[in-house]
Every structure is written in C-alpha cells, then in structure tokens.
Length: 266
Image 1 (cartoon, one colour):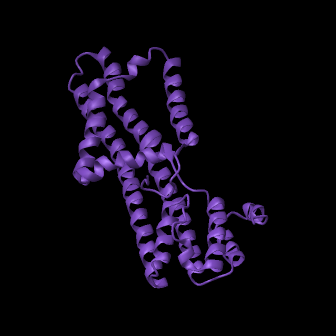
Image 2 (image 1 turned 135 degrees about the horizontal axis):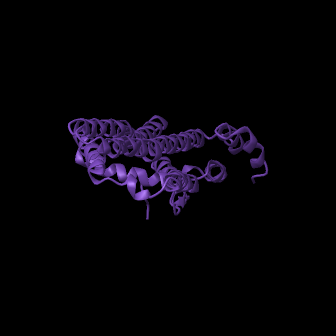
Image 3 (image 1 turned 90 degrees about the vertical axis):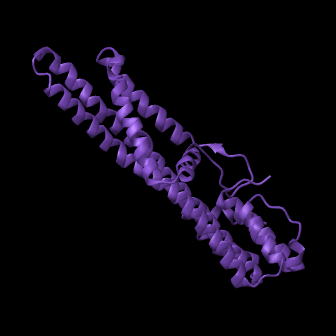
C-alpha cells in the first residue's frame, strides 16, 4: 500500500525532534520547581486566553481543512519516511542498466522502494515524451512542496499569534490589578498571574510552534531534493544515458563526504 510521501517503508521516529521537545519542557519545568510549588505557574484564565485566543485567531486565518491538516503536518516532525538518496542512486543505476539492455519496456512490472520513482517508471513504460514526463513529475513535486510549506506557514502563524495573545492576557491582568489598588498585598500575586499569559505565549511559540514550522520546512526541502534527483535520473534513463554517467550526475545531490562511498556499486 502506498502512502502520501516518497517512501513505501515504515516511517522512523525523529529522535532529535522528540528529545528537543521533551528536553525543553523538562528544563523549564525543572527551573519552575526549584523556586517552589510548580502549581503557582498554572492559571486557568491565562490558559484560556492564550490557548483559546490563539486557536480562534488561527481559525480566522485558515479554512477548517487546512487547520486540521496542520496537525498531520506536525506529525511529520516526529515521524517521517524518506528514502535515503544513497539508496535511490543504487536503485536508479540498476534501473538504468536494465533499461539500456532491454529498453524501457523491460521496466514494466519492476518494483522499487520509492513511490515517486515508481510513478516515474510507469510514465517511462507508457511511452510519454520526455517533456511530458518531466512536466508531470515536476508538477507533482511542486504541489507536494506547496502543501508542506502551507502547513509550515500555519505553525509559523501560531508562533506569531501565541506571544501576542500572551501580551493581551497580560494587559487584561494589569488592568484588573490596577483597578484593585486598595489592597497593596494583592498587587504582587496579581502581577504574577498577569505575567503568566506572556509565559504561556512564549512557551507555545518558542518550544512548540516555531520549531515544528522550521522542521516542516526542512522536511519539505529534503523531499523536494530527493524528488528533483529522481526527475533528473528518469530523464537521463529515457535519453539512454550510460548508468555510470547517471550515477555521477546523481552524486552531485550528495554531500562530498558521501560521494566516494558509492563508487563500489555494481
């Protein structure tokens, strides 16, 4: 069964994202605990203002479908499946060798690990012109990139709105505090509660939303790079290029330190 993405294999958990999220919250909560009771940092009205305000502000900016889809996009920050470029190069060289010996029709029924590559092979077997093949695959790549960047943009907006809602909550708290100046002893606790909304907004933005947005952009760029490499490979295969020439072409997508390790293929 195929999934949307570029790899048929099971997605792996991104430990960097998971460790970063847990670590950030652990450090902040530990810092809170060193000063006394952690529960003093919990304030229901402040939570409602920041979380509820951010939620509804984002809903005004995006359609419901895109809003709900943002959570699916966020999931790619923690679990993402992407065929390693090195493995794709090995597969492509084998495909190019098969096509050069038996023609493009010899690729019919050939299974590969990457959905996008499989789609391209099908187009080659069907006998489409090179311009059509490249155009269709490029369109697919750009549309996928657009969807990923749209999801990243939504989380970027959450990162922008949450601190603003925190400031609004702080201003509300300050107004309430200043309207009750008859009791000087209540000023300190009231000020602490007012500042909690700023804390919540900053935590949501800098510990959740903005990191997810940046990770989504990174994933989108990684996927686009792999798909671009596959498009170049398929165009070269259709043109009848030598498999070793294709291999050299695709190695330009790898970091210099990884290029030499592929020389022993075949």
